[in-house]
Image 1 (cartoon, rainbow, N blue to C red):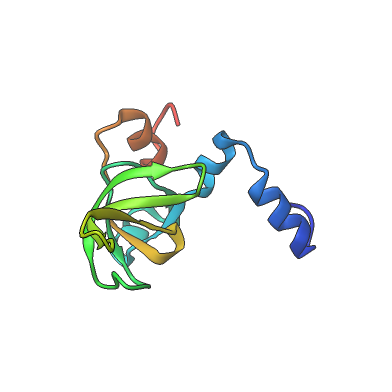
Image 2 (cartoon, rainbow, N blue to C red):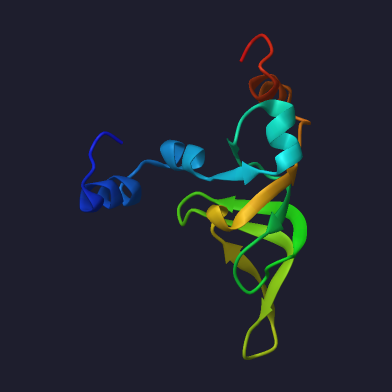
Amino acid sequence: MSTTSKRKQRKQLFNAPLHTRKKMISGHLSGELIDKYNRRSIPLAKGDIVSIVRGDMKGHIGKIMALDTKKMRINVEGANITKADNTEISMKIHPSNIIVTKLDLSDKVRKNRIEGGKGA
């Protein structure tokens, strides 16, 4: 984003296309992963193990079950809330409130991109 105007930045954020929002759904890495991969944050993917550091579910550790690019939220396994009719739904968490503790590197393209190999 090239502008410093708050309202223009918010407008760009909310009007961004989905392929750009996917890149915006990124989370900070834990200290060990920062040292290992020499980067501070990374776009999140289904299967990453994260720790929730803010909000009602603070301290919960779980695997990312789904990414909602439209609402820019993630679903973490086991982070559920109970509704008034006693049904449980998955809590939607903003990516800034989590720390990635373990990466899912089963995808070869993602693994090369993160580790800086050929074909990145």
